Structures are given as structure tokens and as C-alpha cells.
Length: 412
Image (cartoon, rainbow, N blue to C red; front, side):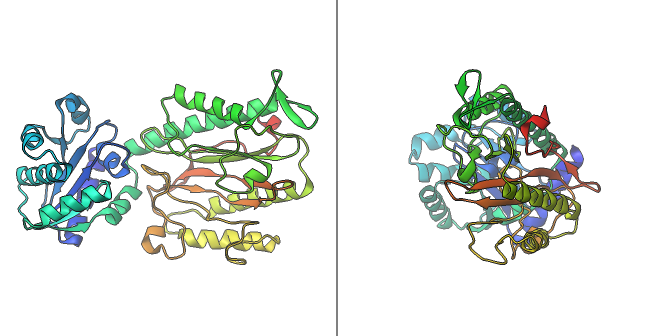
């Protein structure tokens, strides 16, 4: 773990050198901020700030604003700036307006960290208006600013042992939830083409409730929701699925789950209860083959875009439209092959055309591989997507080693 921390600190110092900045500062309001989580995980804090002064041997310092969070702050293992160090009571009394309060707080943290006015690299997600006021006030006192967000994304790309352990945990629970869905479907019966279970029609909403229960029992949340999308709804890749929709025999069901613990996981399987139509069976075979091709190609040194091109070419050879053969298509293969996963659901590495080094796969990356084929027709359409979560090491590790069977009865 010390090796991970030393490597991260070296990354911060290299970033500060490249930006010619005197310190890296994260200023974060209460709420969801993945850049803050990156620094303070697993602590749960309200408003907080982090200062990383430039210089050999300098490491992050965490400022917290209330003594009620002292234990959470201490759990980060970072050097601390207490509310007394930051003069929180004074600024709350003398400059209670949010802009003035945060500007004084940040200036105090920098002074306490031995950082003189000059260029500062910024991170964190303050509301736009508040951030503008803070920077305007500090700018009049000799500070100037540059964004550190792109550089931090590059540092976040390679996961530490602790981060990887949490992703593994969340991925394991995600697999448990998908297995629960498969079991629920496998135990269904058919009445007038509708699926029934335990005397009730089996709806999208019932599946979503069961998924939520699995995640809640493991302490996971779903800040981005989930996708449980049957038939033509699944033919629109980000359709979450209508809760009242009853599932039917012979149609596809896309189940894409992406819960968060300390970090996110992401996994998709597609089911079809009963005999799939021939075109669905053919599309499923094509998607499964594309996923295996992507697994074989996802190695350190490869570029995400090159993997995307290869999958597009494979689908085109089978007669399906892709973003390369028919830009803007809504039918066939309509999206990218994958994305990085971590403190955000979508982060580096990128599979986009112009991603440059951000798109190069490296040891330590955690990424998805998720080919799919779609027909959004409301009456006869379908969605098919298979998605695995992969940790790149010398030997890549599939963090979501579930079956791929289309028939849920093959899972039990």
C-alpha cells in the first residue's frame, strides 16, 4: 500500500511540474464529487479540501470543516488540516457569504501548507457560480489558476490495490444480482406469451426491486440507476426499461447493472426466455464472438480505438451497420466498445478515435468490453449486449466471470 501511495505522490509532483504550479488544490462542496472521492476514499466527508504542495517529499493534506468528521478524516491516512487550522469559525463569522468563505478557507489552507501566491492547479466540482467568485477573489490577491482535471484522470487510470479490491467487491455483488435475475426468469411460466412467477405477471419493476434489494444488502447504491430493458426498449442502448412493462416469451431482456460502493462496477447480460427468433439468435452469436475477440485484443499497449475498429469490421462483415460503415446509425452496432471504470462510471481509458494516450491500454486499467446489436422497433425490436469488466495486468482478469447464455434456464 505504501508503494501505491508513493507512486501516486510521484504522479502528483510530476503533474505539478508539467503545469508549473505551486500546489494542486481540490475544493469540493458537499455532494457527489469523484475527484474528492479519489483523494479521501473510503472516508465519507461533507465539504472538504485537499492541498498537495509542490516539492520532493510533499504529500496531500486534507482539510475538513467540522470536528464531527474528525474520525472520517483520520481514516484517510492523510496529513490533516483541522477546522482550527483553517480558522473555520473565524471565516464563518466574518465572511459567511459562500464565495468569501471558500476563498478565505482556501487561502488559509495554502498558507498553512507553506504555499505562497502564484500558479495553482485546480480540481474539484464546486458549483460554477461559486467557483467563479472564489477564483475572482483569489485572483485579486496574486493567485492564478490552471485545471488539473485531465492530469488527475491520467493518474486515476491505474488503480491501486485498495481501489481494485473495492471494484472486485462491487463487481462480485453485481454478478450476484445478475444471477438473481437469471434465476427469477428461469423459474417463470408463460401465460398468453407473458411471463408469470409466483402467481403474478413478471414485470421490469419486479426485477428492478429485486436487484435493488441485492445491492442494498451489500451496502451498494445505484446513483446512475440501471437498465432492465425488454424487446424494443432494449433496442435503445440507454433505455432504462419501463417498470410496468410485463416480460414476454421469446423477446430479449438487456440487464445492465452499474452500482457503486467506494467505486463503480459495470456488467451486462442479455436473456431470452423461450425460443429466440432466428435473427435474435444470429445477432447474439455475433455479439458473443465480438466480445471474445475484444477480450483477446485487450492487452497492455493496445489502443481502445483500434479495438473498436476491429469490432466494427467484424459486425460489418456479418451485414450489420456500425458507426464506421453508417455514421449516426440507430440500428446495428451503435456505440463504443468500452470505457474505463473507477470513481466515475465512465473514465479513462477511452475508446474514442482521438483519445491519444488517454486511449492506450495500460497495466492497472479497469475497463469494460461491451459489444452490442440493436433494433429499436417498438413492436419487433431487440437489444443484445454482453459486457465484462476487465482488470488489465500481465494476464488480464475478467472481474465479471458470468455465463453468457441467452436462455436463463441454462444458468441454474
